[in-house]
Length: 289
Image (cartoon, rainbow, N blue to C red; front, side):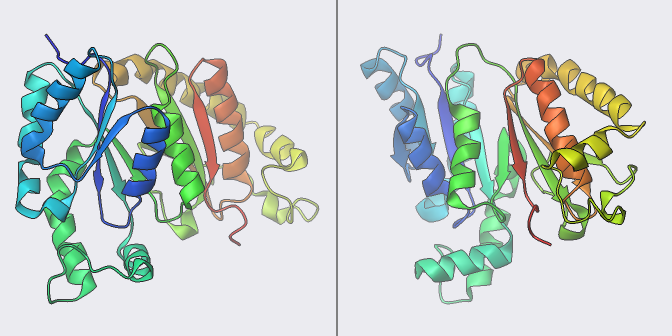
């Protein structure tokens, strides 16, 4: 029998990737947030907080390499509490090396694993230490191209209570020339559709403009893709939920992330919402050209 019938979220990931922002959002959502908890105390804290709150208090634990050697026990602690009936959701925050360097230098704090060496050496050690946990994560958010408000929206969308547990989708448009989002569960390539860039009256507009959306979604191949891709996502929903995965990130790409991917992202999101799948839309590269 579980000691806690509420939710337990473990927030972890790279230093500078946004753990503090995620923790603040969870606190605003009513979670009891504990920062930098040694993993050996995880089971004890879950039991104590659950008992004091009648088993309904939602808990968020921020665990990272600041606890140094204690951190290596985190996976074992997760297995222990899972065996005792508490299934945590692991939220992992990621960012590229260059972004982490800029953020860490702006914060003017040394990296916890840097020692006497270079900042990049500390980041490399941290990635190695976190590699197994990253693979175990229930939700991975790549924050390199997110500001604090966009990250907060992602976390809010994922963990806000809304009654019954349902699959939640995040649909992200992007441009292939800027790279594929590393946190995507599915990637769909819209470059099979004619490009509005080559239509003079549409070139300066984006997929948020109705004339571009009508042009893209009106192509003969567009509706069949949306129907089949949307049906596939809906068919996967129950399986993901049975395996404890509640959040699905779908990346929709075209060359520059301005016309086709934006139009099809908006159209797919509409279909998913009509299927009662809560859906957040983000346009990663819109305005970047």
